[in-house]
Image 1 (spheres, rainbow over the protein chains, first blue to last red):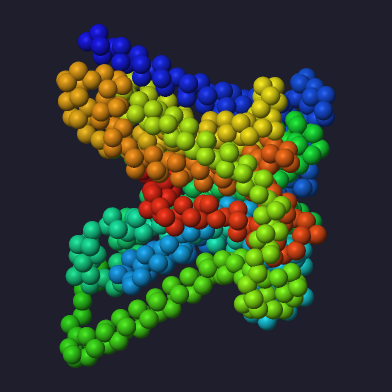
Image 2 (image 1 turned 90 degrees about the horizontal axis):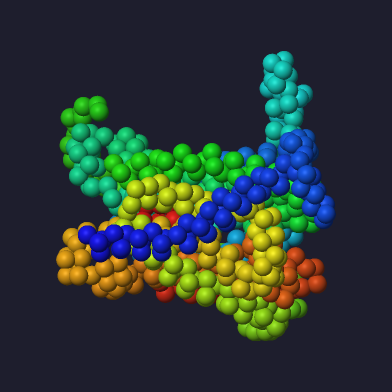
Length: 319
Length: 291
């Protein structure tokens, strides 16, 4: 018994460095950032005196940050949605005893191994209007401007739908503020190229875990292939779907490297994100307190996604 | 489920089914091939553009054609510019991966086999660290690195990758060790093994796959990191991601050199993926908490 207690002590002592490191570098530094975000540290003098919520008011009032949040929502919806659809379709195709399955799987998944920087550099070249895809498909560079396109798709307050929205007092929804910047789709394509294989791999692992008897039983009951998928397979894959949405969603909310390699922020702020706003505010303009405020907003966004997921995932394990 | 209607003309159905099945399969292969083209097209462009001479790469109308003659000039030119950064990346990613995996193995062992009250909650709190946007810690991190003299050093980045690698490495090893039967551990304890004995005799000998997964994961994320590097290092200590991004952002650098540089930056992780894809996969799946 004495030996056991000594071993338990070893365990706790040897785990301590990791606990201390995470406490300081994760939780401590988040608290520190939070404190900076409430200060006047907006130049190199780093004046930490109390500033209340002024930095938050300032960033939320800034047009650029509003655009960033819109871009983040648009990018996340399209990136996660498209990756999910492509991933699930590819996984289902590969799960049908395909010849050369290993080859297809490797080809679809390999972009995961390379950095968003390399992906961004290549796709920038692929989507440059005077080169790449436009040359390959013979598209007119003037009308296919990809990431250089400043257009923001929106209803317009003059359109019939826009008028209805205006009558309801929701006219803003029809303006460019809630529009979809065309340039963002270039980033979506590159991000989907890199991450959809990951979703495919998750779904394929999920599909392989579903016993064939379940499918057979449904077929014997007279279900069509689509019904088998919709009523039997898809519900069983819910955990995979949740996981994919969470993993892609949190990557999307933090997206930075890809945008830096492809567009920086432009045209205008059509492809700007909070991550880039934070970096420029804090490390180029030395407005640390405002940068910290952006960082905290990003953290809150990610936490609303991750905290319930962690709770769910722990719960699943103890089941 | 709806009841099955009894087919009136029994033989016609199987034949139509068979036809349909064939068409579906042909469609699947066609779609998979199209997908393969989509995923491989950037590779084709990277390699072909990299192999072209400067004059040839300049003609964008011919960018999809094979190079008239293979020239390694763009790779030489890119290598001349980014070889110091390639070395930096190696000096960052290798020690970070090795040290992370050793630490992660220890943490995972404790959290899997020496649970104490609150250890599961502690584990969840550690896990949160792997999802945070680093923008929420960058400002203090920069201050601390400057204060202790690690700002703009290779060692500074190694430390950062090890610390922010704790959650994922601990997760992978913990989930790996949880699968080892407690009876084995108990048996070793009866034989007189203590904390270290159990680790050395029971867990370490079967840990190799776990180490491979973690080494690959940590190497890849350190090699591919951009945000920490661009914030915490200056030009002479830049890893290859920052250098390639800089190369690509410059108007004076020809496209073929940019492509060659991007390919050089991608090669180490691609080689690992090709050689050890299975373990790479496991790391990915572990990253989704399912181990």
